[in-house]
Image 1 (cartoon, rainbow, N blue to C red):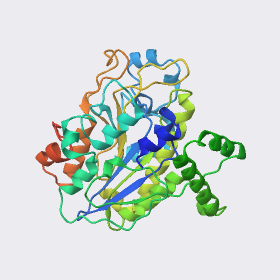
Image 2: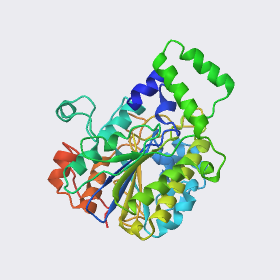
Image 3: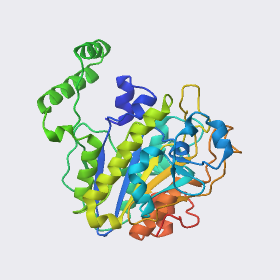
Image 4: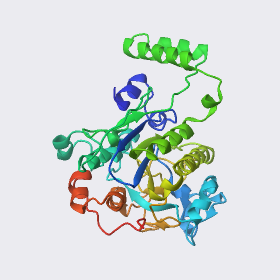
Length: 387
C-alpha cells in the first residue's frame, strides 16, 4: 500500500502525517563505482531561513522578530547556522558540510506536503503531466541507476516502513528499516477500535502492528538507540560494503507552531544522523556525498503561533568529503522581493544541484541527466558544491 493511501485512509490527514518522525524507510542500490551517494528526505518542509539565516538582511530581522533572536553560529559573513547544528560546525570548518540557498522543486502554490514530497522524489515538474503518463511514477534515483550498467540489488529487510518513492522503479534496489516500537495506551487502543470499527482493512492492519510490537519489544540496549541513528549506522555499514546509493527520510520538520522547539529537535537528529554516517563510513566518507532535500521552504514571515507556514524557496544541506563544504552556495535574492508576497524567491531548481552531484560522482552525461534522470531539466552552470 502506498504511503499516501495508508495515511489518508487512517485519518492522519495533513501536516502531521506527511511530516511524521515515525516514518523512516530506507532503500539501497549497489553499483560499480567507488563514490557513494546518500539522499536524505527531510519530510515536513525544513525552514531554510531559520537553518541558514541571512543575518545581514535587515528584512529578515523585521519579518521574524521572534525567530531571528536565536544565537546563530557564524558560518559566513552573510549567513549563520542554526545553533542546533553546532555538532556539525567542525565539519563546516573542514569543508565537509555546507548549504545551498534559494532552491526549490518546480512545485508551486498549492503547498501540500504529499504533493511536494511526491514531486521531490519523482523529480518531475508535476504529478499529472505528459511525462508522468509516459514514464509512470518512478523516482529519479531509480531512473539514474537504470542508465548505468553493472547494478545489482542486495538482500534487505522491510519492517512496516514507508516506501521511498525516490528509488522506486524497475532498476534493482533493496529496502531495510529499523524496527519501530509501537506503544499505545489502553485508552488509545480503545479509541482506535472505535474509529476503525467500520474499516476492516485498517482495523486488521492496526491489530497486526500491535501484535508485532508486543512480540518484538525489548528493554535491551539496542532498542534504546534512536531509529535515526540505527538507520544511519546500517546505511554506513552497507555503503562501506557493496552499496553505493542509500536513501532514507527524517521526519519532524513541520513547524507551524513553536518552531524553536520543533526545529531544534529535528536539527539535532539530522546532526546525529550525519555524524553517525561519517563515523561509520570511516575513510569512505571522503568518497561520499550526502544531500538533504525537503519538499519546499517556509514563509518568510513568522506567524502568530511562533512558527512558519508552507512556503516555496528554501535551503538544501549537504555533507561528505566528496563535496565542497564550508559555504552557502546559490544565488541569494534577498527578502525585499518575495514570491507571492510571502516566500523566499527560488533562484535555482534543486534538481540541478542533485544532477551536477550525480554527474560529478558517477560521470553521467549532461544529456542523460536532462533527458532520463530529470526529464526537461536544464542543468545550467556547474554547481559550486562540486570539488
